[in-house]
Each structure stands twice: as C-alpha cells, then as structure tokens.
Amino acid sequence: VVEKFDYVFPENGLVAYKDGKFLSKQNIQGHLGEDILQDLINYCLSYIAKIKLPKKRGTFIEFRNGMLNVSPIGRSCSQEERVEFYELDKKEHIRDKFVADLRREFAGKGLTFSIGGQISFDVFPDGWDKRYCLGIVANDGYETIYFFGDKTMPGGNDYEIFTDSRTEGHTVTCPQDTRRICEELFF
Image 1: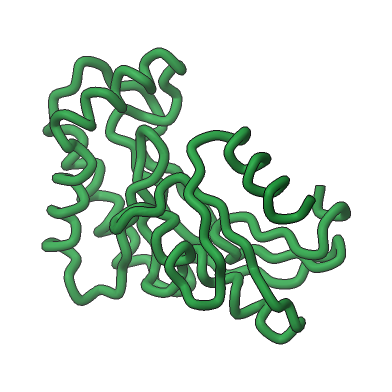
Image 2: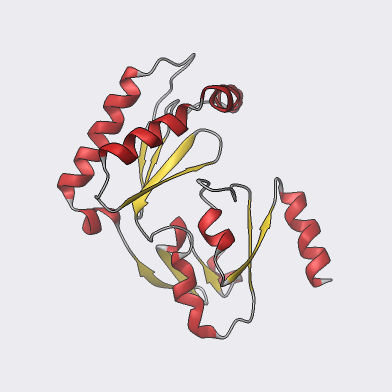
C-alpha cells in the first residue's frame, strides 16, 4: 500500500512513509517515559476492572507506537458485541466518563484523550493527534489538503485535523460518503 501513494501516515502520522519509503517514527514510551506510561496503564486497568458492563472481552489496552488505545469492552469483542457496547455507550457515556476521570487524574502530564470509533478511545502526548502529519507535508507545496473523518465533533479523534486551517475538512459516515464527496470535488 505504501508504494501507491505519495504519503502514508499510520498511527496519527507518527509513522510516516514518503514515495513508498520509510521516513520517520515516534514512540510514546520514549516521549513519556516508563513511569508515566505504567501509571497510566495501571490506572486504566484498575478503572476497567471496577466498571460493570453486560460483556467484557480481551485486549483492553492496545499499545501502539504513538498512543494507547483503551477499550472498556475489549478490542477482541465480536461485531455484534461492538454494536451492543456502542449503543450502551451512547446512553450511559461510559467512555466520556472514563476520559473525564483520566483528564482529572493525569492533568498536567501532557496527555490528550480522544474518543473515536465505537468501542475505544486513544491516549497520546499533546500534539500527537492527526495533525502531526501536516508538519511533514507542509513544505511540499500542496494548495489544499482534504480530510475526511467521522468523529469531527469536539472530543472526537478527527476534530483537531478537521478544524485545522491547513485542511479542508469533510464529515463522512461511511465509505460511500467519502466517494460521493471526492466525485463532487474532483470529477
């Protein structure tokens, strides 16, 4: 895939490829240090252990290069369980409450908490959101950078890049939305 595009930015752009070649990589443990990282992981696991949900599955914290992905139900849930949790979360604000608690507990530690998708939220150093990649492409002379995302409201994991002055943001709900808008813009 990386050979098909000028740029590829997995993990919020903290891993970068240009013209099919590896460009750069950041990592959360080097930035935060092991003490803060372990405090955060331990706190999340303790919090998850105390909440009662209709179902819990495995992989509650996924460690990635530039972030932790935290899922109260667990990332190994089935699609049906994912939808069930998402509907419950819309009513009971499970992730909103969890994130609010983390913001209080880890205030001043330079962390951002961003809800995305149906079952999880991301934790990453301030500034390591999806805008990170914009600094990499800034000097390449692009007149317009288009961004398409579904979590474009405040608190969503697409909000910062969606509202950034360097992008033209579009809210989408499915791949068909993205295709339709691209056809309107470019064809």
